[in-house]
Length: 266
Length: 272
Image 1 (cartoon, rainbow over the protein chains, first blue to last red):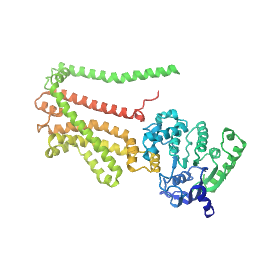
Image 2 (tube, chains in turn blue, red):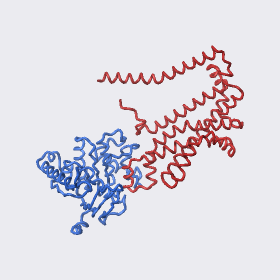
Image 3 (tube, one colour):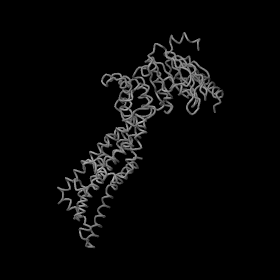
Image 4 (cartoon, one colour):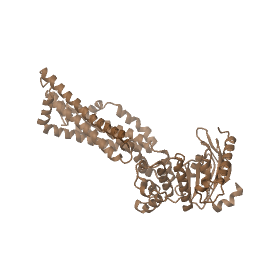
């Protein structure tokens, strides 16, 4: 995308150029995938399961190498993995069961060599940020599904990452918990000024959260279309019940159906 | 609702009590039958001593039996400690280096499947008797620790492993903060099996060495008493060995429970 090159250096964090991924079992997960992440935006990758959206996220995180194409970080960003300032939230809370909430949130700092005393204020700030200050000493098995996910988010945010990657983090939660976490996530995003890339298969979730939605085709994953959501933040329950929201959801749903037809999906 | 729940709890408690009382009742019945068979048939004590005589022997021969028990237990715990170090150490090395694992894992298996009773006489030729017994006990005890630790180290949550990679963790950090804690329940499970096996290994090797005359563990007492037709003492030593085995298993189970009770499903009490 040569046309976007000047803009790239101004305010983007990372860009994927012509990225393709073919797994060892010959399944093509991604093909010709171009994506540029701008500083401060909330981008959702929306698509059916198996459309390669998680693979794209893992490639950005450096957890999977692309078969072709390149991942280009803005050259003002430190290059080495671990120094890139990425936070990652998986679909499962992925907590260490042998340590409590504090121990889990401490992990990224511990791996960077911070001692526990020095890290304590950051840990408690991160736990307070997700509303779990009182559960600092609780073990994962003592927490509900939503609370575990909050710990997972606190862990991702404790290093103040420049880029927060989230892989269907709320897919396994009940709707009430999910709505609550959606609101809290938006509040955290505003407060911390992070950039978020959010993978989801929920049209409603993507519209509610995002400033930009990337609709993907299945097998192999390609970008079908891009839909900006020009609705001002903060968004709240009023937005969730507004005609504007309903209209956007309809628009995104139509795009998703078209994407699935184009990709030959089921 | 609450009535049925408290009824269920009472039933649960009765069930627990039965699990404790029934084996004891069975034991008492068995003792009674044993005693009756010996009395009614007037079996001489050098063929089959009655339970009363056996327990009397435990008390009268206590000084000899106690010092022998200590010898056996010392060997068992030394072997167990070495099995823990060797088993976990080898598993960590296997986990780190595939070349090392492929080269040596088959020999660990061979060492395990070869009956220790057949290895013992050979070891006794090359090693002093206590060392040979220790090595035999170690051979049978280390494999379950090795096998379980290997399984545990390979059972790490993939996403957690990815998370460690994402934060640029070193291999040592991954081992200490991720793999070993994840393997801990498996290591403790292996240790529980190894505890019983270490005792068996120590006894088997000592029996094999018994005719050589050296040593003074409980196994040696059994062999010696056999030669002297001191059958009551054979039974007494056997009972002490059983109790020692049960005590080792119970102690290791308790250790495992204490370490895991805060987080592992196996050690957490059910909610209702």
